[in-house]
Image 1 (spheres, rainbow, N blue to C red):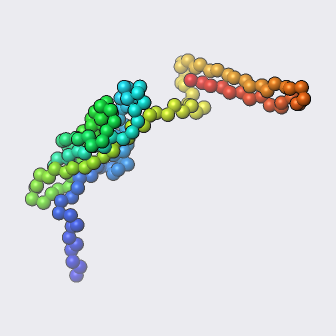
Image 2: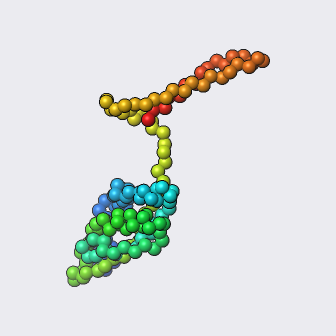
Length: 153
């Protein structure tokens, strides 16, 4: 006859439904880069300590280390939207949990659009074509190829 294994922790920590990957996806979908911070090219991390009540709702946020006021406010707004799953506690205790999270603010990279991103019908397309032709010098033979670039936006 086997002994029943006791729980490791008396009070279990709250967790985000779907795990850390779902948490990161939620934050990425809700986070909007503040226009003033984007204009000033502010980039970095905001460290936030937050409190979770017994229902899984974020009740309080506190900036531990931040950037400018706009980024700090945006990070606090996104963290306050989080909802956690709280396992049952013994004797129906109402415990407040404290956690820390880091919200990343990275400047968007203006990557060139891939050729597969062709606009739909009715959308005007502006295209510029540049042709680079190497000049023939007196003592060199004529170049054998021409390079053409097309830029669409």
